[in-house]
Length: 349
Image 1 (tube, rainbow, N blue to C red):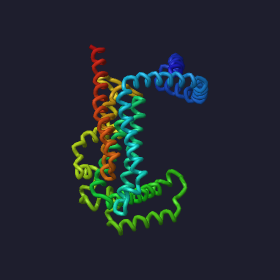
Image 2 (image 1 turned 90 degrees about the vertical axis):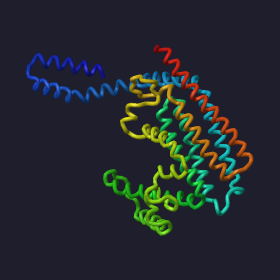
Image 3 (image 1 turned 45 degrees about the vertical axis):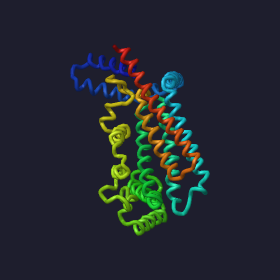
Image 4 (image 1 turned 135 degrees about the vertical axis):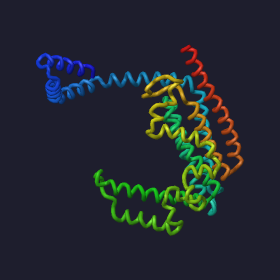
């Protein structure tokens, strides 16, 4: 790119020798650039294609070296979170295998929904691990945000039982219907195939049936909570308050910064140490204490909700092990992060 700027500067210098009129100078340079642009683009593209394998190999080598150093620093904490994930999976798998023992007509929806939420919580934990092992603290806290939402929803459903679990599952039809409406509304601009008329009618009937069954406000946001929460409280925050988890809202709001496009996320990065002025565009070896601890806590909470509803002695013992791992994990993530902070302070003092 610098080469192109140098070529254009030489053209500008030459044009200046032919006319002193700035407007004419600009016109001549623009015409030259416009005429040359296709060839410049083609030549540059060809050069990049010929050398891209070298560029990518070097980039991958640097990333591999970085990841090796990162995991040497953090592997003990990462391993503890991975152990947490594996034990949680084994608990959920054991409960699923013993479904005949646990499931009855009175709790079938509760079993299905909590098991699905638990499975998703493990998947998100694994995603957090991948992000942290590759140096992405902000991405990790963004994924924890979803895991926290799952823990709150699971607690709410556990508290109110099979009927609310059924409503939660059936509300997916409302989400599908709303997605379909948006797709139809914007489809003329996007040019995809139209939704078949029969499918539209089927979805509309689903919505009418749900309104008849649960009331017209069921199709509003968080309408599946309408048998428990009053109209003004049917929000995620309302659910938090209902299950007494609203003391964690500051951490949740903080994690929202990493999800959305607000100015806080543009100017503040978890992976930037102290007051360093860095425009972070890639991985970092710092900032994993909070996403690591938070992820461990939320996973333990979701798993304990599942176990308390579908309990046997084996799983109670497994929960004790899970809690033990979490306490170790808490200490280890903080310990490693403080060590990095101390080393950085000594280096810059």
